[in-house]
Image (cartoon, rainbow, N blue to C red; front, side):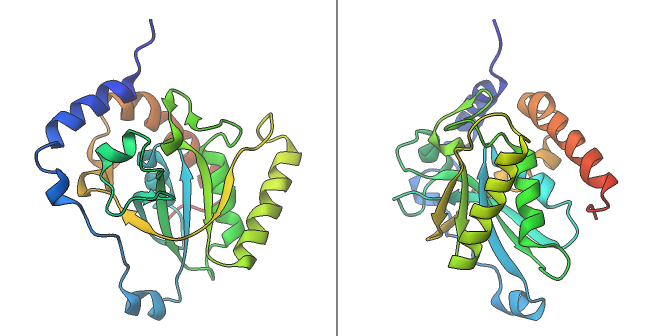
Length: 218
């Protein structure tokens, strides 16, 4: 019988953090310092591609990425907690909000990484992580981003990079809620955690090899 490390480890996390992250401790949504964004001419994009532990870690390694922050988007509830999102009832997806310098890394390059890190043909799941919170989703802020996302996804789908029809949603961005502090940089702080060592680590090593050879890493 296969052991679902994600469910096992998450059940432990829920017990450990249930007290410190109850409904009275809900976190405010993440708002980057506007002066920093303006000074460095940064832009933002928000992606959802399965568990945010791996996605966040990888994007933070890229040249031109100022920060990649784990959080929740696409739902109908304000100030969602991790426990609530895991039920699938809030409608949120686990996402990563990326602040980047377009003079160093382009929107299209970020899309390339996004498609590399997860399987966009899997509906409401990534491997053994099952639920709408793990759906493949791109949030756009304007029509230009929407058109680029649609065009790039069609190109990837036609290339056969992943076998099957892409189910990635392209949705208008409304709100980003920063995840609890213990999720930020989770893999770096917990590489020996069962799910991290069994699932996240192999993805990161594959990512480092591919994009390291392209010279995209910091």
